[in-house]
Image 1: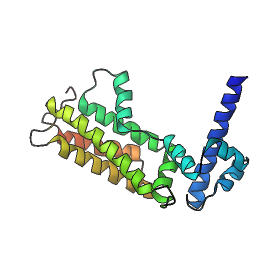
Image 2: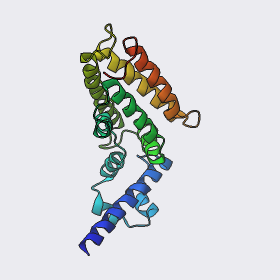
Image 3: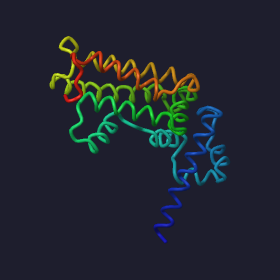
Image 4: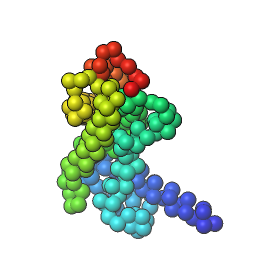
Length: 210
């Protein structure tokens, strides 16, 4: 019985987050109230306050459902492929991230963060975007450092510059795609760009064994 109650509570929380996503996307974060979220989910405002302290808490929980730190993506790969090279781990992690972005929830929540969220109360979208970007850049630099130590980067390319180049490419591609996701597949275009960029970064001839 206790397990069922816990499962029901979890389902209620997920339903509220689903409703929040839809309302934030439709009206924007600042113009959406907890009352609207509750009504959209077919629940009372009390149900919202049972699971969340305020709208900021709802917003952060919504983001948490789609968080995919770059290091986590790499860890998933290394768990399955123990002998994967440093550059190949970076490449596959990028492709997995692109694939997830094309899933409806990931696309919707990132669109909300970038285009539908104003600075409001204790919700600071710029600070959140900065935190995500810095986390990604730090992880990229760590992995490019490993690649450089193994001789997998061109001798005239430092790990920090390699990280800057890839990070700028990822950011530009991400924002361009979010502006008009129907224009191209981020998975397909991203694969082409990442493959070419890593090839240019590699000492000739390219080797995936480092």
